[in-house]
Structures are given as structure tokens and as C-alpha cells.
Amino acid sequence: MNLSDTIKDLCRELDISCSELARRSGQSVQNLNKKINRNTLSFEEFEKLLKLMDVEMDCSFTLPGGEPSKNAVADEYTRDQLEILEKQLEVERMKNKCFARISYDLRTSLNTVSGAIDLAAAHKNDAGKIEELLGKMRYSVNQITRLVEDNPFNREMGVSQGESKPAETEDDLLEGRRVLLVEDNELNRDILKEILEDNGCVITEAEDGEQAVERVKKLKTKLYDFILMDIQMPVMDGFAATTEIRKMQNRSKADIPIFAMTASVTEEDRRRAMLVGMNGFLEKPLNINIFKQMLSETVI
Image (tube, rainbow, N blue to C red; front, side):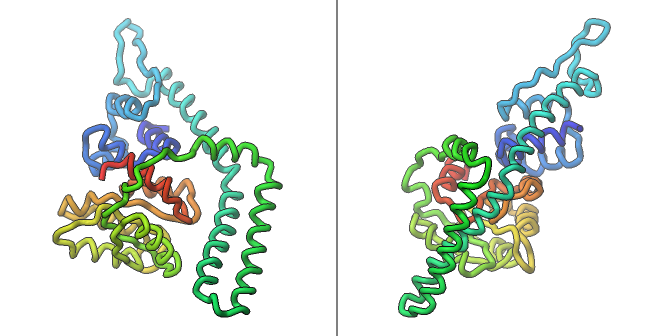
């Protein structure tokens, strides 16, 4: 395991984006990404990044002649310390895998209920359609109840939810924010648009990554405050679109904060989001309070 891999794993486990780490270290996202991807971090840079992430690890050691050194990265003591850190990260990864399946099933059922409610509102005068949608909602609610009651980790999940309760945020945090909403599913896009507009956002829509890139390219004034980017889309996915935006020569456009959206968060998705320069990761359906908390911790 090398220094760059350790930084990547720490960013993923601590949910720190590459852009946030770059901001803390006083360098550009592109420069930090280049060093991490090419594995050219010096040991001093590695140690500094650990401190910026509030990770403590004693990596100093003494050579046989009695002189202290921090440059001999291959020293056995340093490798031992890295192995200890890797084992701690592995514990967190194993814990996440335990909840991955049930989390996916819960999100699927909740999305079904949410979509059925919106469709019912649109067909309120069609009794047959309403009854059909109620049947789907009852089935999904029963699925949710079974998943919560029958899974062996429900007690742990309750503790986790309590610990991750988002902090109180200002009600007007989103007021007047100009947002580019990139989502290929029309129903999901309409729901997200309504949620954001209810919180004071001004929305521009794009149906895929290619449209999003074109919208950013054509901007002259009044840049978007941030972009909400679905990652799984036809034509051009969210990762490719973010890469294109980050490559733009106009730095004010290239540095627009971009938040990934997905119904199923995987370890690989988080890794790719960090590598292409996304600022955060949001799960669908959107929890507006969690999003506000993420925004409050991001310089935009």
C-alpha cells in the first residue's frame, strides 16, 4: 500500500472530497489530484494531509546512526504504521458492506412510495389508478417494515442514524442559489426541482451530462452556485460531465461545486467522484437537511 492509496482511502472513509482537501492544504484540486494519481506525494506532504484530516499517526523514526529522518518512506516502522491504519480502514469498509444490501432495498422501497404518491396526486380523479397506486404503496410499506424488523443490525442502524443526525442549519441557506439540476429521469427531476424551489433555489435543468456541459460552456454571467449531478445517465454520465467541466479554461466555470446524486452509493462511485473532482455525494431521495449541512461545510 502506498501513500496515495492511503490518502484516497482516508478521504473515502472520512467523506472528505478531494476539492475540500485541496482547499485545506492551500493548493488547486488539479495539482493535488495529479500528485495522488501519479503517486508523487512526498512524505512531508503525506504527513501534512493527515494532519489536515485530523488523523494522528506517528511516522517519525530514527536511523541506526541516531539521526532522525522522515524521508525514508520504505522504512519498516513506517510500513507497520501504514498497515495499522489500513486495518482500521478495513474495519470500516466491512461495516459498510454489512448495511449495503439492506440500505439498497430500503431506498428502492422508499423511492417506490415517493413516486406513487406523486403519481396519485396527478391522477386524483382516477379511482382505478389511485387504487392501483395504493396497492403498490402498501406492498412497499410492508417491505420496509420487514426489512427494519427482521434484519439483525436494526439496533446498530438506530445508533448510526442518531449519531449522523444533521446539525441545525439556517433556513435561508439555499435562498437565491442558482442551481443546475442534471437528472435524466423526468419524474425524479420534477421532484428534486420542487424541493429545491421550495427552499428558494433558482433552477436550470439538464437531461444528461452532455447538456450540462453545454449549459456551463454558454454561461457568460451569473454562474451557477452549484450543480446537482446524477451519475448514471445516457449520452454522458455524471463522471464524464464533471471531468469535462473541470477541464474548462475558465476557472470560475471549472471550479463550480458539483455534488453527485445516486440511489445506490458504492465504494467505487465514491472513489471515482473524488478522482474527477466532485465536491460531495448525495443519496436519493434527497434529504434537504443533509444537503444543507453539506453546503454549510463547503465553500461556494
